[in-house]
Image (cartoon, rainbow, N blue to C red; front, side):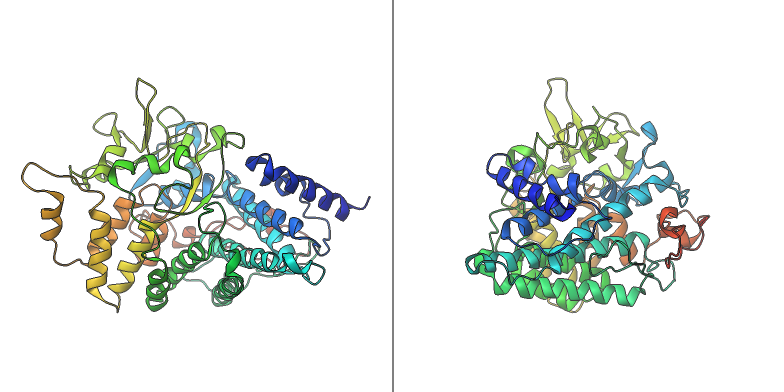
Amino acid sequence: MNKRNKIYKIALLAFGLIMVSNSCSNDFVEREFRQDVIQSDLTTLSEIKSFVRGGYSSMRSSTYYGRDFTAFGEVRSDEMYSNKASGYFTTVQDYSMTSSDSYASGTYNQIYTLVAKMNIVINTNLSPIVASDLPAAKYYQGQAYALRAQGFFDLLRLFGQKYTGGTLGVVLPLKYDPKAKQARSTIAETEAQIESDFNTALTIMTANSAIDAPSNKTELSISALKVLMARFYLYKGDYAKVRSLSADVIGKYSVIPKDLYQESFRYTLRGAASNSIFELEVGTDSSLSTSSYAYIMSYNGYANLVPFTTVYSMYDPADIRRTLITRASATAHYLSYTNGQGVTYGKYTNTVGADNIKMVRYEEVLLNGAEAELNGGDATKALTYYKLILANRLSDTSTQTVAQQLAAITSVSLAQIKLERKKELLGEGFRQWDLLRWGDTSFKPASVDINKLAFPIPRAETDLAGTLVVSNPGYDN
């Protein structure tokens, strides 16, 4: 049996297991995908779906959205830091990474594995697919474009020179060829490819929208795609596109009520929360265990990532979100912990890492839309979006009901929206990227070289015989 057929046989077997176990359905490509094997076209819908789901498996890895990439957005910010318990994220936080740093190489390799899997789907000739399966095959091919775009975007933010004054972006492989050597594209070229992939994904998925299933929160829907695109356009400062994309999603979901706020992050409400748009499926059988982001956060785990003292005090006492932070002492705060009765609180509530990974929440859509409306749009809409969140976060006080508190708010400023992003998205991996796109590098110690805002290109890449990939300035390769 040749290697291609071996991989496909495993693909079909794994797809057959989908009906039996959701956790198994996402695992096969992670185990069997070989980056040194030339791939041929996928020939069935089952194979295409299995490779796309293998992409989701790559994304949930502990070196990507399952832990590290999310943590990178927090440990270099003004809202959370690593207390260096068990040595986690020390080199990232201290800007002491080298070209051999495992955080850089682990995430770099995982994202390019995602890209490789999606390239196989993207470049597959769909003509052998039976006619009845063709719309679904095209739809999944559209998802592959979207996931490749997200991978390139994440690589650009971590390894590109956007915030260091340089011109280089990242390597952009557009087909699966493990023997090819390719140089880094420029930032402009990288951004153009990301935009092209996102737009292609939207065109394909919209044309096959009968397959769209927004109720299935563990796969990318058209609405979820539009939010990922809005994130990219926020990064670029293209507020008109953010307004348009956000408006297409606003009204289709609802802000989670305050009495379900904490519960909405739990495994028990996976996919069922009214504010959930896209999640990466984990579950107990595929638990990330001690490698999970939750275990890094939890007081009963490593208790490694903690909010700054000022974060607790930025919340109004009547704000439900304040209750998700516990104060172990005047200087120690945690966003996830377990009380003496075994009841867990916080956003990251399951120390065995079984909670689904929240990729897109409706509250982010409202915040994206509000920021964009205050940058050349309609300030009244921005105020409406802002109040939708506050109405479900504030509580009655001894002197004012929530309705009275909201009535007293007659306008909203960009500064207030920025603060609200910090309050609502705390710990979710957004903060460093928000600060950088706003031009705020105050979180970086003045003594640290600006070049260190970009991660080092892994030595295994720059030392490869015949490589065309150049390193980032300020590192040892």
